[in-house]
Image (cartoon, rainbow, N blue to C red; front, side, top):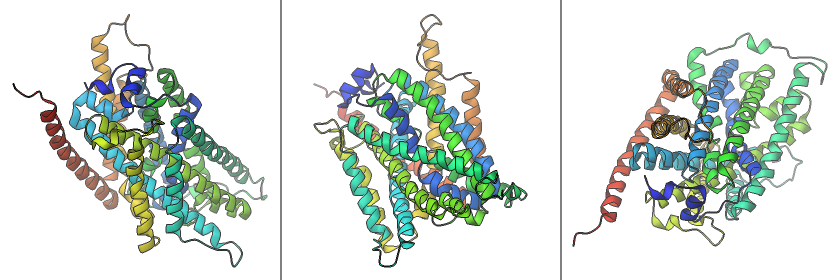
Length: 475
């Protein structure tokens, strides 16, 4: 195994040029910040439009799966809190090509997600400004996206302790507002707000598009839950990671499920599939239906903050993954360097570059960039989660063979192993099968599998060249 990616937490941090500046509460909020973004505030409306109320099935299945994946991540990260996270674990389990493939696929996914969140936040803000009084200046969407990218690039250049505090409060705002939204939704369903309850009539036609609709919405849902993995990446810069990661995993997993399933249940109970897919997002659309248009505008602005918080967390996660790839000689050497504050600045700049490109594309093709970006990354998270599951099963068995019950590690461990681990594998297989039933999602999956193979082939070439370079020359 690569000596850079193994050893004590302090040795890992020292070897990578990073510092352990994140606090446990910051780690927890980063997990929430990474997962609560475009997928909930924009993708949920598209999912409801695709599947109707049956989208709840997709959220429940995905919610169960994300809890299992988070447990796996917790065990892997507590045992080896490396900055490369599941890329490092895949490398330790299956070799350098696996680590290369998982790391680069994840970085590409997050780079695209960052761009989608910048354009999505700009689109929502543009929609809010269009309802402002006449004469209010309305910057174009592409310009707002570029401004957001520039501002959060600067934030990601802060020392990790300052970045963590910024992201903590950034994420805290949207968590508080989601809780308020759930309360308003419950009061609306009970008829307390306007005296008339919408009831559950929307559930009469539960699956208007059948299994195909559920399949079409499934990858949108999987994309929505993506981002929780940042907890594993941030473990490499967290104080006392063995304890902090376990606490964050338990907290993030159940909160994510409550926020997503609870919010989507209220949305499908109140709004029709067409209304849920409103340009301003389903949250604002629901509050407008409740007779709270001002609150709807506020919620739209909160959605902007939520997307920017997720963007901020994803830039962090992607840059640290790219930095780790460079540390393991899977990426250009210049990405290995860190600034005086131990931030991998070159990796940050590589990560945000696509966001600025997306802003320019929005100027050329207005209104078409966001949907394209969301469709690109829908299935990549399946490959990442499959790699996490395979790595956890392999490394857990390896550790169990190397220890006895009296000397087994006391770090966080996956419960009911191997049964729940194989349950996660089964759910991933089920998602792939269902997604293959729809022509659109089938195309996404095939393109993702093709991209994964191409990355792996490039990984074979890179690792062979690296191995030859590191081999001692004969006298």
